[in-house]
Length: 256
Image (cartoon, rainbow, N blue to C red):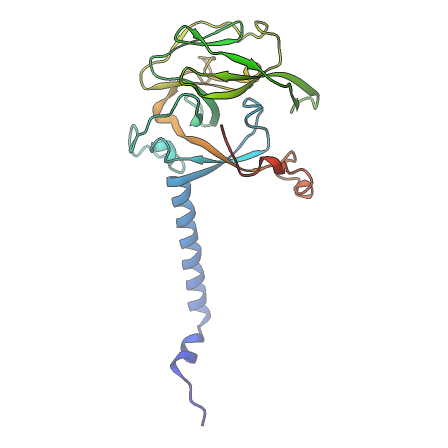
């Protein structure tokens, strides 16, 4: 006579039990994904060339959401549950920040070059902070394909040093003084706000345009761009090009 052990009975699950376990697993996975997205890191892709040469179109990066604490914009769909920030930590001059646009619902990535109270001005293409020019050291040229025309462009490339000693790369397409944003008014960053510009100084819509992005409210900070985890020249829908158009030298590199 064959005996059925308790373990063999337990292993035979009904379709209803299997479905319930599947639903539980899916819910658990969703909760984990939402928690990581909300608390730790948010994936972000680069849609424009305003941050060349630091970030290129087709770069995919992780944004550290705990770097500056949390605001309503740290949450999915940005519900107005609270004002200000919790676990607030201040960004550092030179950080690459991701933030919600003050005048629209888009997320932007820019270089933080102005803290609350700072005086910012462009003079003949040279960044001045609190009246002092930020030194530029010219290095090798940077070449990149224009995303709109497909034309190969050659930029002058520089290492810019901010007042706190942070160094980063910038590029210029036009001669110094020739761009409309090479000579600006003096901006005074209001309390509770920041000033961000693109590393591609001639081709970036940023805080220099007060009727556009303008000053960035502290509450609108989403996080700090920390790590590139993937990069390719192909469009995301061009699956057949993913392997051949990957920029392998950029994968898992720190963002500076």
